[in-house]
Image (cartoon, rainbow, N blue to C red; front, side):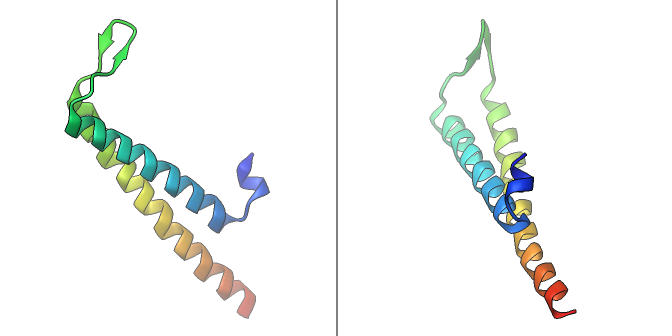
Length: 79
């Protein structure tokens, strides 16, 4: 629903920032060794490293796509 209200560049930057924030939280959890439980199950620390790398990559892709959206918008204007 947000995608219809925002232009592509702003949408991708917001998503990239959100993924960067989530990535930072997972890295802090992994480095400091915070315990995380869902019900009675403890989530291993190694999963925070995995999710850190995944969300970091998603954030990077989002920011690079926002730069491409700027370039594509400029190309469409010049036509």
